[in-house]
Image (tube, rainbow, N blue to C red):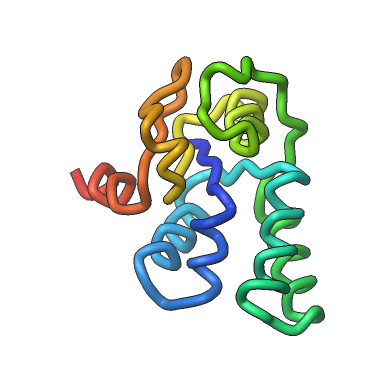
Length: 132
């Protein structure tokens, strides 16, 4: 499967050993991760400002994600599909990358459930889906 991992899932994966870490691991080994410069920029900012990781560690994570993920340029999507315009680049990356799913903890995205052929799943929903 092709998967977009939203910023919050990646941040949680590197911040703690929990479900998001497991989701990231399975995506790295069994699926194709699609990201964009927008998502990488958000990851960089959040790891630095919110998680307060040292800059060199953050840069190692960004470099690692750059080598392990396919980086796409998001396509424009209609603003009416999402109640938070900051989430439009995530959906745009999913469409550009022709992904099967977006994995996110963002409720503004999760309420959409599906856009075109892209499922929008929480980490728990994705994990359950994989175990079926």
